[in-house]
Image 1 (cartoon, rainbow, N blue to C red):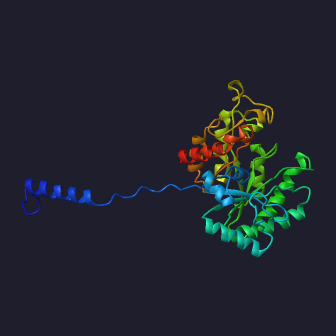
Image 2 (image 1 turned 180 degrees about the vertical axis):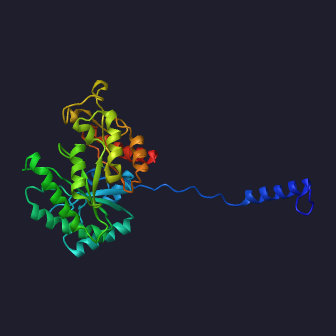
Length: 320
C-alpha cells in the first residue's frame, strides 16, 4: 500500500464526516416547480359573489381569473355594472386594463358566441376587433363556437375549416389563440374534431375543453379519459362542470343530452374524476386556467348558491 496516495482509516473517517457535515448545511436543490394554473369561473357566476364590482365579487368567491363574454358590439355585459366596460374603443380597453391592474384580477379568456355560417364576414370583422383588444389586455385565449346553424353536417366541415383558418390568420403576429368549445352535436364528436384540426393545421386553433360536454353528448364515463387524453395537448382553456347520472346509465351510450337538466351537478358531486382530468392536463403540459362553469347552480337553494360556487373553486385548488 502506498501511504503517499492512500488515506489512513482515521483520516478517511475524519474527512468523510466533515464532508457529510458540510453537505448538511448546504441548501437542498429545489424540486422543479409545477405550473400554477389560475382557478376561476365564467363571468355569469360573478353575480353570486355579491360584490359592488366584478373584481370584488371575484375575490369574494375566491376566483383568480374569469372568462368574459364579448358581444358583437364589443360590450362585456356580465362585468359591466356601473362602469359599462366596452372593448369598442382604445379608451374602453385602457379603462378595463387599469381596473384589472388596480384590483390584481385576471381575465383568462374572452368568450365569443359565434354564428359563423350565418354571417361569416361580420364574424371575421368581430374576430379581428376582439383579437386586438385581447392582445392589448394580455388575454391570450378566445373561446369560440364552431356550430352549424344553417348548413348541413356534410357541408359544415369544409366551411368550418375555411372559417377557422380565417380566424387564425386574424390572430397572426399576436399571442392570441382560439379554443373551440366542444359544444353541441358536432364538436363533441372526436372524429369531427380530428378532421377539423387537421384541415386547419394551425397551432392557433385548439380547444376550450369542456369536461362535461363529452359526457352530455352520450360518451360513457369510462371512455371520457381517453378523449381528454387525445385532445389535452390541444386545450388552451377549460370549462369544469359535471353530471351525476344513475349508476346504470354512466357507462352506456346515452342519447345526446339525456336528462341533463335533471342530472347536472357541481364538480365535487358529479361522476367525472376531476383529479384524473388534472393529471391528464399536467401530462400534456397544459398552460391555461381551470374555469368553473356550473350549470346546476339554479337547482341549489338561493341562500346556498354562493357557497356552492366557492366550494367548487376551492375543490379545484385542492386538486392542485
